[in-house]
Length: 575
Image 1 (cartoon, rainbow, N blue to C red):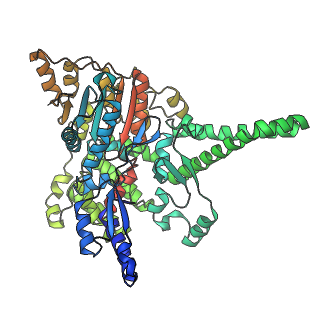
Image 2 (image 1 turned 90 degrees about the vertical axis):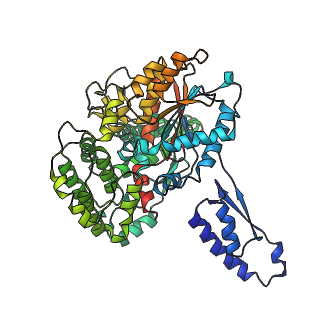
Image 3 (image 1 turned 30 degrees about the vertical axis):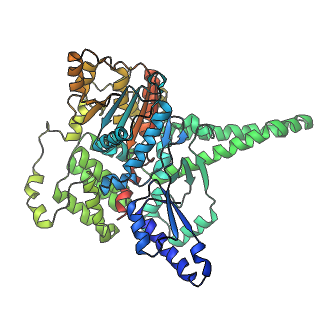
């Protein structure tokens, strides 16, 4: 069983050719049959490669499209880690039919919703494929979700590029994750592997010795199997860290009671309570170890959050570029430094000459073989095109001119219209009874106990777009209200069960002239299914969870893969 990737398939072909050449003297070679299962699709050119390699008739290809995997309450994943790379970096949409099949099966199980709101070109293609596959839903009265929201990853890059402040988000930032399970390894994690070894304060020999001596453990990111994770997954990391330390001390005091017990009491205690306490202590120690590694790997986390907040608000772009360049030199992280640069480009803009200067410094640090990464990121819309020096020199004068203070980037304009940046005036999010001041508090305990704004996942600086759109759908009372809230943003499409689609504005106008169609707002079935094409993160999931609690609704987040910001950038290095 392999992923539907050309490189993986070609590697497997070479291995199988070696096997068949060794068995050519065997008379029953024709009786041997190799089976390859491709997940999620088996492409036509795989058959062509079999014939070119002389394996036609000896190898049989199959495809298996597994459906949504339940990772945690309100979290579903297709576990397709290369979908973002295919869609946004290579422009390859061959994996979308498999995703459409999974969405169709979900419709068969849960029923067709009363409306689907899409935002992005890939989301539109998925819905077109769903129409071609045909209506396979149950009776309309038995639908489980009142609305679907399908969103492209490139419509809200900042939610992936910003560093989350919640426990689950930071676990995904530091540790490798597979099917909802992370591996706690101090010497081999996402931060240590991307940082230059010279800047890690240890020699390679010492690192390898400690790596061999240390035993890695794992944490399943599921609230049913791990109550410690379930209680703390969406809380502020600083609060969780102190709570876990308190639990370790409490368990130590509980186990010390054995010294003061009589023999009969000790026998009963060991038989009944001790196994549960031992299991709980093992879980708490794993989380304590994970939190300590996170603290060590992230370093000066407060400085990073301040830098990201200034980038979001476009505060002194020249100074921000200088700070990012300084982090490149002092911290030497291959992916996270580029991550900050991409965030700066989206929020404040970067000139070709500035990109060229940074690219030169980056290649001097990590090697000039990484130069194509900038073109890959430009293809995904995360950076401008890297121009030649002569072309970039013509923009030098323009880049030195200060931008007018009233001028906003496209990101800031859209974020202001949807009230995503909590630094703007009147920034109370849809569906939130109060503003973001509580979530922005520097005190982690008070901010966690007074969570009233989805921006708490980024320490009160930014509301994930998907959470804001869910809040708008749940709070809207009629089509005119939806048109007012989304009219200034291009790309939204509202799809109805009768295979008709409208923009929010044209839908409101259509209802005024139609005698048969009824307004689908407000949503009576207070359940929303969200699907993010290109990967979701725990900050978005936690923000949606808070919106659901504030509005008395249920929100299920589905995606093709759970990704941290560094994973997004790392995809560009697979060239």
